[in-house]
Image (cartoon, rainbow over all chains, first blue to last red; front, side, top):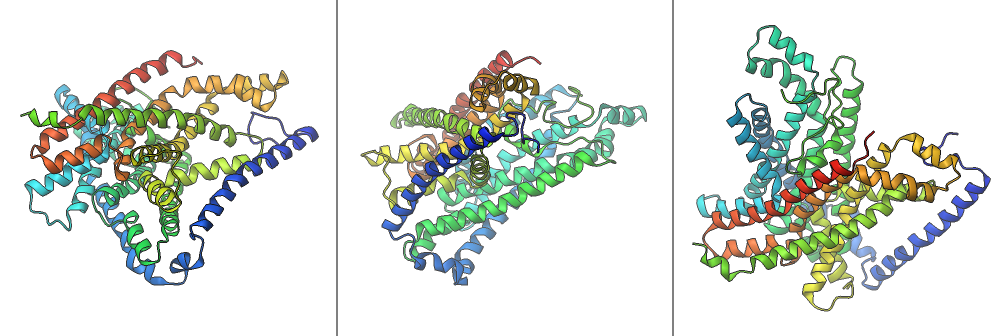
Length: 310
Length: 221
């Protein structure tokens, strides 16, 4: 049996004994806080079956509060993604433009929106809709959340698009140029279609970030998404705050884990695919994209090409 | 035009943002390192715990975690973290929530750093008879930390931006002040520009300095 990492050998008798002791110590270290949690939950009557039952035996808790909340979360997230994608593509391509002023302007806009928190953008959008438009106050939270998310994520997607195009092997662009295509033909017919495939895993991962950020709207803008269903739930089912939070968290985790797993599979297929160039913007690259000034280096890109500045 | 700004404690609000960032960063670095050590440890139970923690926490919105610290921990379970006034309680709860969330990302950054340490280094350490904790502490982590300054800087900048979520439980940081000012004053564009500028001042230099540092300290291979 080979060890799972190179950090330690396959355990012998003494190491196995040591590991058993560590396991025991760790178990105790886990048990103490766990016991404290259970005790304090029991003290505040949060473990009573009556507080948890609505989620298991009563479909009304789901139909009235959780599912509509989830629906709003999904609507906001998908709207934001659908609107941010073309905008992001536009800015991503603009950043690779041959004209310095186009490149510079797009770069400044992208860096600006990556430098400020998405909540600031949402607060701004919310107030702007209230002051300058006649969007009804019922739908304003949705508008504000989606606008904030679009502004922020378009700039992140711009980086993904840029990275996806740069990840393609240099030969692709060169060959197209050699065929006599113009710059925008090279982009439209050769680079972009291939880059879109390469970007898919990163785009799906970014969807996880968007889904998580919709919760901001629930907490601060009065958007009735999944997190916002906690208050009416605990008000209607006997102050079952802990139970409501647990259920909401589990729904988020299941939704996001599904997306993450999907992104991982997609990435694996693209990396192994015989017909693709092997260029891919990895799902894990997404965490670096929220940083102003940060670009994806050759490490994060699986491309056979790996070159700088087209 | 700028007169009304004097009526608000702008610097004070941004100072709270900086404090939130600082305490959360220190806490998340410590707890994240412990988690990373667990995830690569030879003890299966620790590995399992580390993996489960990271996969769960990363997939829960930070907003849910922070609102939970207030509604769940404080208001339902009565956890006050040893603080007296509401102001300090909210601040400490927000830091707790930010540490809980950010440490998962610190852990993943570190783990990717551990993977960049060449196999020969650990093999040599084991050949010298170093135990797992010794290998990790003396050989692997010092090299891993140097190669993850860049990724950790990204986590730190994300954390700076994430402190705004503390506004959800009433911590008087920058986003909370922005909300208050938007409600009371008419100059929406000016107010937004001020806060956008404030956050750029926090995030852009951090990125530049740490980007420079990461190039300086990274191990040439």
